[in-house]
Structures are given as C-alpha cells and as structure tokens.
Length: 107
Figure 1: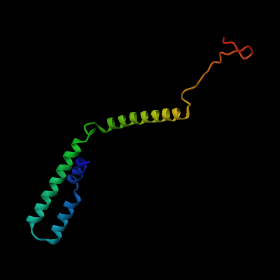
Figure 2: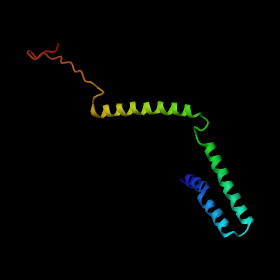
Figure 3: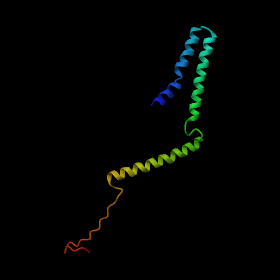
Figure 4: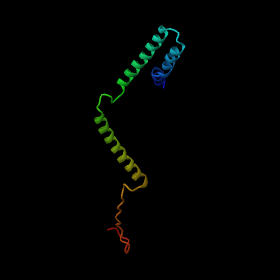
C-alpha cells in the first residue's frame, strides 16, 4: 500500500499545472514560471517512465487484443463450469440399480 501511495504522489500532475497557471496569472517573473514549468516537465517525464514499466506495453495492440480475447474466452468457460458445478448439472449421475426388486438379490 505504501508503494502505491508513493506512486500516486509521483504522478500527481494537477498541482504542478495549478502552480504554473498561478505563476502565469501573477505575472511575477519569468524565472518563477520557468521553474514551475521545469517541475511540471519532470513530472511528465516520471509519468512516461512509469508507463514504460507497465506490463504489456511492449506488445502491439493486435497482440494485446488477441490475448484479451483468449482470456475472456477462458473466463466464460470457467464461469459456465462453476455455474454448472453449483447447480449440479456438470456431473450427470447414472446410477445402475443392481438389485432385483422381485427377489432382492444382487445381480
């Protein structure tokens, strides 16, 4: 949890955008605006680095869609099997009655 909270803070770009806009509105000096823009650019760079580390980004869109389709089909199959298991439909019971009712002997 601490790692994800730190990652959320790293990619929180809106406060930097707000600071740039506030600096521009104040029209204080170009140094302050330039410094705020540099901070914003560094946040964008961190975001790019995090995106590059995401799993699956090295695959093409077609390959990602193909894998998604396969996984979706597996999910549907497993969901159906689970539903059949819960209702008892997946295990047809064919009990052979080996008892002769008339004599009560086993055949």
